[in-house]
Image 1 (cartoon, rainbow, N blue to C red):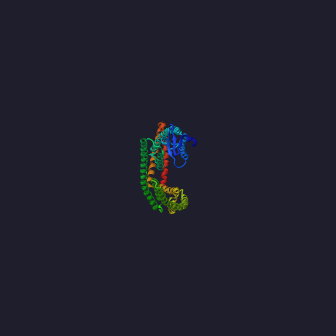
Image 2 (image 1 turned 90 degrees about the horizontal axis):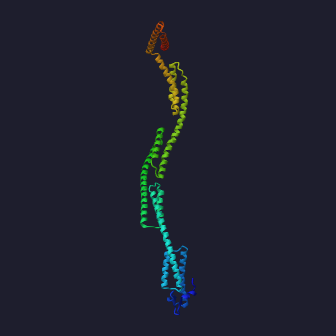
Image 3 (image 1 turned 90 degrees about the vertical axis):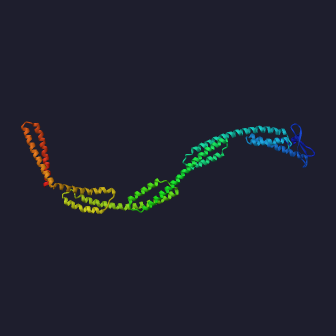
Length: 414
């Protein structure tokens, strides 16, 4: 930077206050008129104005060299200073300003070129980023994560806004694709929630009816039938769509309360019933042992008379549990069956028709035996030993059959 002393080499002030600057070609040009006091003060004033311009140019150079500053702002500064050089209003070395201007023009041009290149790269990257955002949006079209995806679409819009602009036509085409993807997703989402709302209304109707039915049977004493009804109601509840959380919890609480009322009452009743069944089982075990002592049967009439009061007392006792029923009843039924079989056998034994058939059968076998014995004697007489041996086996079989027939006939006649 030049001093005020050296600067006087590039300008002067006349006694009347006229301030002149020396131009690079050696000529002088008036820069102003000082009429406020000492002419030297006027010269100093215009020298300071020169230094202001010089400092402004130096600062711009420094910022450009440091990679700072705005090229367009520097070009405006250059134009302004150039205009000042044509009609100067300062006193100082104009050649220094011209040199600084030339240096600034070079650096500003480089800066602008770098900025343009960087801007072009930034636009290219921004366009690539927009393509990525569009492709992501198109992949989200069929997403069923409604809340997360809706938020992501909002974020994509915000990211889009922050990106540098590129070629208008290409950017608009990409925005059109993004907008179409977002609209398609929004349409599907609206349809889903519309269907869901419709389903929830139907589900609300179904579950409210389930609660009504549950309350209606909560005090029922038909334990098995009502338990099955509650199971069916639970199956209907599970198959119905889920409601909005608050309503779902409210209806479920009412339904659960009705179930708890019924099943608590059933548990208490069955507990009493189990105790009763246990007592009944012990009583029937005593009767079963008493009935089993009737066996074996020696006198049918006495057995029947002994069993009758046991049966009457058995029927008065009442039920036992399902798991014990078949086993305990089988013991009494075995005694009853034994008496029935004895009665059946006795009936068969005293049947005249059967006795006559047994007599006829015995006589027929005796006749056949006599005939076979004669045939054997004849075979022996003729020397036919083979036939005689065969007939001997037949005779043995007939004798065994005759003995069995006589035994059966004896049962009928005793």
